[in-house]
Length: 562
Image (tube, rainbow, N blue to C red; front, top):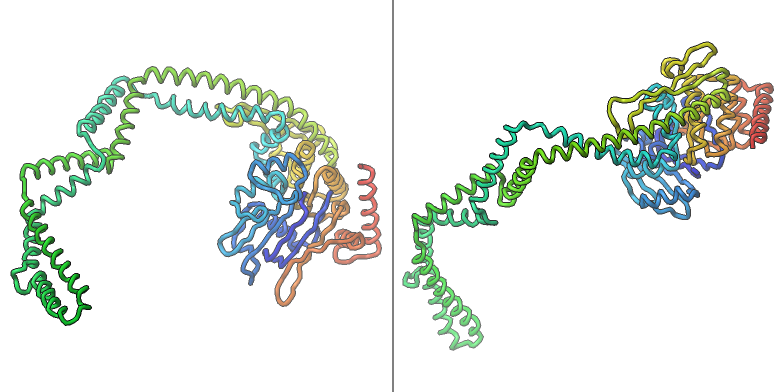
């Protein structure tokens, strides 16, 4: 059950908090007061769309927080499987929206919007102002039936999904066996040629890098020798201005001075060490120059080998690992081509078998659907009678799709007759906007008997109705409220009278800013709001008495239905 809705800086709402209870929670208010803004805020908290424009002018961010009490063990188990821990049996869902970004949290832990949606779809269902228009789509009709038979078909649909994935994979694989024999043999020869070309090169890991370094050294050997000769001359001890001569002279000078100051011994030792190192360096450079030779044959072999490796890189991959990976792909393809006919026969055999299994599963699911559709349509018909459709008939027509699908092969559509003597016709061709709204309420009331979602929200379910029909809708909402927590936005006094808790949404101007506020109404204030809904601007003693009578009638109806 939804315990609390807290909204701050969302559109026109400065700050509002609703403390909810069991049964029917009614929200009323003038048109444009902000009733739907509250539903938009709840939808945003549940992971719906929310742009930066929802942040109240002058505020840095908007915040929506919902607190759910999760008492049902199956819900707790489902949330645990999603790795969502509860805190004292509660789930706190929050979303903060600022600028172009938003942050969603479950019990204080930041989570993606998809996780919020997966968690909260177990706890709440919102029927928006225009959701009844979805009844104009045939795909929605099968979705309603499947929700009705969810428990009876759950395992079957799970197996169907698994078989369909296999069916789709095998269908794709079977479609790839389109090579004629000549093309197959030609591709086999080409695969063998590429594998042989790679193997004959005898590639080694890191070889290209080593050869590139050697080639660069040999190609620049003359420049290297000339440069090292210049370095050697700079270190020549016989040259007066060389580094070696200068260090030697410095060492001799310090040795002479050390006779007068023993503290110069450390400097003297360092200079002699440097002098020794310089001599070692000159010998090493001399040896390098003597060993540095240019072998034209070796240079040619290195160049040819490097060209061959780079040629393979251009064809098969940028480095050794990529070339070997390509070779493995070619070998796998070669094996597949050599076993082409065998694999085709095996794939066709498996494809035929999975088609048979899909035929069986789809047939079983279709049989369950057609059988349960009779129960569903009769339940919807009875609910529509309760909603003042006095002589209505409802059926469900089925067609078979041309191919298997993840959801079977059925296409289903509600057929309806709203008046005596009228033939059954598709729902989309018959119902008006107000009638669609009542039909959706009837469907929701039927599904509520099998649905385990604790909280249902109806946003203006009263579209296009009045009078006795409004009273029937109110009674139906009250009936749903005995099994679920219901939140409903309405403009009709008959529906508002059924409130177990009544909230008034008002819009006003404070400090030059428009703001929406929410007030919880006691019995007296609720009757006054009913009188306003009945009488409009002028509230007379007659409208007030009528509102009192309406509230008392609602109490009696709820008492008698318990």
